Length: 205
Ligand SMILES: [Zn+2]
Image (cartoon, rainbow, N blue to C red; front, side):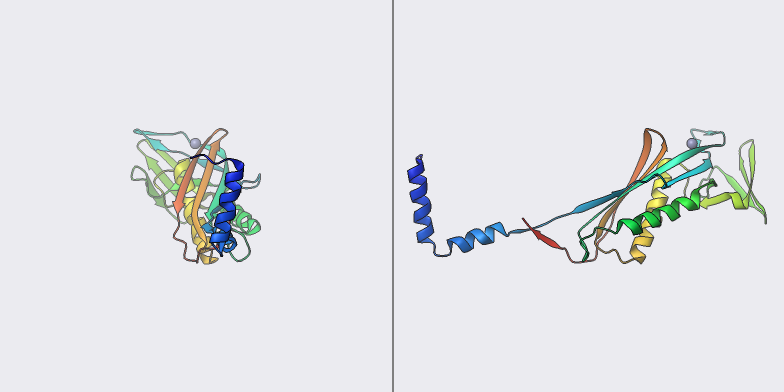
């Protein structure tokens, strides 16, 4: 049965009078709380690193070369007591320090079974089949990864950032997404889910 506008008004009036707590009911429905989630995203011109590397793949070893890498990071979570997912200033400082660790260095993967890496007091000697590289130690950053692909660099950065976020007690975070752009237009993203420990903050719709 279809009601005309007079019928609708009458019906509403009837309900209003029938249910004494009608307005209370409407108020409660309007204040139904839902869990909200948020993201913060940071990418800045100084969150970059210029580094040398080479990758082994398909029985080959790339020639030594370098990239101007760019990073971008996204943190997901619920709002903390400051109404932040995470403080932008702190996040930029942490990311800048991580990028500085890699900047102007040769990135050497220590978990690559195809590379023979020996060291003495001053240098690393790296062998792959007929190739031999000798790098001054102060020019090298050793990374516990199998290959210095953009994917693995993103993974390493993600892990380093996660450790620092935990130290800072950011229990409201639920995920990190770390992006490493190797060359303009080509990048890799590592996403890591986190187990947030804090109570959920609720917001009313
Ligand atoms: Zn490369």
